[in-house]
Length: 229
Image (tube, rainbow, N blue to C red; front, side, top):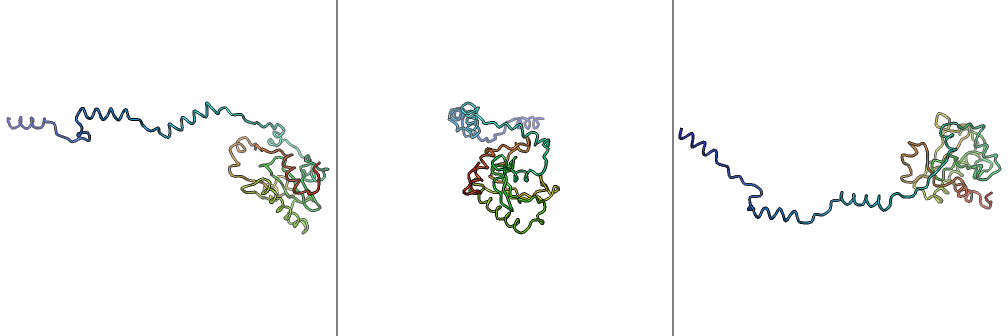
């Protein structure tokens, strides 16, 4: 019994474990903690960004914005516009001016603006004659179209300082041609970051340039010696 009691007494003694703070005495440890608490801490990046964001809302916001109202576009977006005949032939036969959207024409080819542009400077190159099949163009028409297309691309690069250009022809309704009866090459200036959620969600593209301004920019390059009406 005496041996058992002795063993129990030994087991009850606390073990001498080393801790990470054992090098400090009680008073030294307290002073070290107090010193760390008083020392200034560097502000975290999150705190800095929160402060900057607060400055935006108090000093800059709300900012003034321009707004665009185009109620006449609603009918086009909802497919409620009924067109009679070919719009390109109508533009060709018009007496001229920005209202016609036809910037240039000769015997074989012409250049028209897109009434509902995808981007600023959106222009189209097309045959003067009503023709919806590339293989039905005669040699003079085809050569003039390619020459004019190259000239328009040169103008776009000079006038708009673009990062890239979309050039496309859709032949036939099933291929995506909006007006399949009259061939037309789209020339669309592009810049980095020129797309966002707005055209996708609202089916509306905000263009910072009027058709009148676009017409004037192309007219002076394509009609040397002629005055704008």
